[in-house]
Image 1 (cartoon, helix red, strand yellow):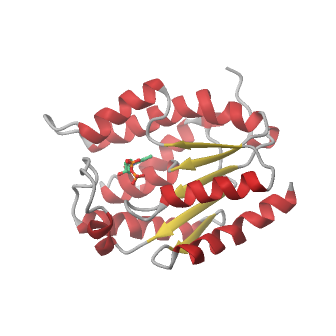
Image 2: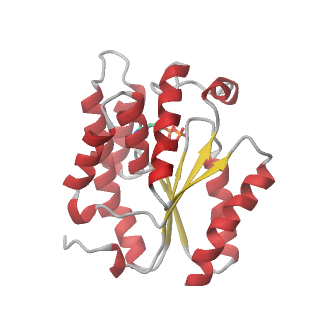
Length: 215
Ligand code: TYD
């Protein structure tokens, strides 16, 4: 497959980040409706998974119990699912002018594997580098921020997966890594996700508006 730069694509690439229970799913659905109301064609997707191969990888990542999944294995699997999704879904959609809304992307690997699993941001960045032209820089990243201590209450009615069973310190490291990334990256915008939902929506709308008018 011939690889291309994002400049050659007409759709916008918007990613959503945050710890478990930060409200990504709810806000992606809202964003999707908002953009469609503005006549924009959208595609909602998520990581890890979505493609057939990606979903098999996801099952191992989230539900392996019988033997420990090593942090580096976890990291490579996240990128394996990601490159499959980029080639099969994200790049073709962006090329056809569709706006892609992705629940988690590279910043999740930086925060969870780099920070949470303590592999270090540099090691994850090296994998991003290794992706070459296959890496698509998001136009906008929305980081829904909540303190780690709020996670258990927000997950209370779910069956917990391998990540959700981790302790508060793990999620504090993830949050700190996310916030440090946001300070470095202009595309990454932090929204306080402890606010009422309408206020979160308003903050998202303020970030989307310049992208809509620029088109
Ligand atoms: P998911 O059920 O999609 O979680 P959420 O609804 O919170 O997004 O599970 C994805 C899990 O995988 C989540 O705990 C975060 C983790 N993850 C990583 O650790 N690294 C990554 O690069 C990605 C994409 C996800």
